[in-house]
Image (cartoon, rainbow, N blue to C red; front, top):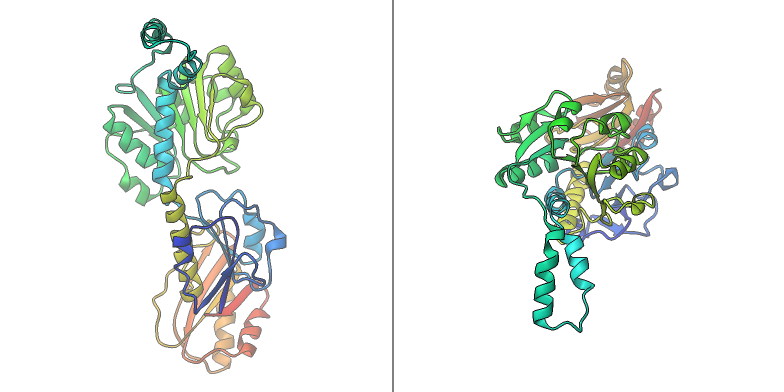
Length: 389
């Protein structure tokens, strides 16, 4: 029986996809084959010799020490796109909040005295409503940084609302590029996008190359009075430079899902409590996608949507399957096949792929591998993990 250790509250619709006869699923299992997590911060202490995979029910994996898990041969999955619509809808809400005096108007109305009669209130509202006048989004320019699943959805909706859309993503995949509307004007660099946009929204992961991406230098390129929206990660923005821009009027407002003590000091910051993916639908979609990916990996060896291992699919053939993870160095495959040949084990099919410093192999063989055979493969230098599927 395969064992799955869960962290946080995982949607029941997702967990129900683990067949009870084949899987033991609980927060309390020991020596788990895989971990299923949302926001729980993992560490080396969560690793056991049997652990093969971690699935994050969400897109960001900053709560998982990916590098150290990779060195241990642990595949890390995420669920890109599963919560995209939820984040898109909240980002559009942020656009409206930053364009119209919605929050300020609500707060003012709620401050009115209950002693006012209807006629007095109506007169007062008519006199004061000019303070909360805003702008329409139609005809304005939205710059989207990151054109993955969320960015593409944001672009489609903005176009439907009559906005002009600029896009920038130097690492966009071919599949993602095919999804983009042809009305999006692709920009060659960030400065071009920022200098032309009334609104700039961020939809990209935190990497060393993107940490503090919006820094003091880039902020100087924003249009005076522009709006910055960040529903990805707080680390994408240099907070000190941002606050300076808000204070001196370089930016009219900052809308984000990541509040900090520093941002609470600014009345121009619209702060939400990290609720971008907090919908019933998004939590269900993420859980279902994470569970399906774990099952396909544990039952077939298939890797899809891993952020540290290569994608790999090998159709099941007759016989038995071995999964092997090793360091990406020369002559590894030859040594593995030599051991199988010495034991008169015929290979039916196989596939090998690598990603950076890691390699992953699926090998289908005629005979069920003995523990001795698996141990002989494990003994090869640079082999990290071996198991029979």
